[in-house]
Length: 276
Image (cartoon, rainbow, N blue to C red; front, side, top):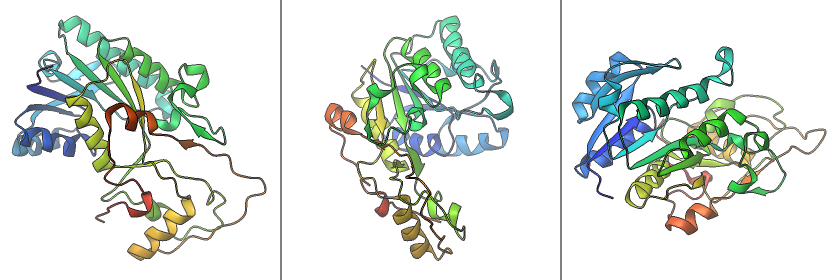
């Protein structure tokens, strides 16, 4: 597959830094945002900017032009709440409809989903543990995944908790008392590895596949929180034994590792790079 143009739908905390290596490698990169204020920053680094909204129907700049690409990376954060769980699948359906209506035939599509689809099975979980919405904790995600997999040549990436740089888990629990989930293993992924996985798949597409994207090591939440608080001077939270064992899941990235031979820059969440 010859790639010249990459469109990133949702060019935010993950998508914007994802564009940089593609630009450095000579690709044309198109990026979308819902914030008009961000458009000058896109131009500045060389991203062709588009202001696009999916509410759930598309609005904003020329969507058909945005969809003229060799690779489409869909990274729209799901917003449920008052909008309801069905809102995100409706957004993804609108993207699929736009692709079909525009006549754009994108050779390869990557959709960023979430490991929140997996239930707490108190064991290691793999991709085949959740294939249909009724198996998922977050059925709407799987509905969206199925819409994307219905396109030709698409891959679903179920990202774990996306961390690194200014996203520091210990910051969010600093000073809290009697946390009862300290023994739960984490399923995190560093942003640099998230970018690395997407780049690897652009170079070596895996159409029709679903992958869990998590660091291969799973320390406990307590270990991660204590390490962060020690490293950055946050007030360490206190921990209490729960009345019953906390449910958990350990998400395996083995399928990803074996399929594309990916080597993690940050395999251990206790050694993630942060820049507060």
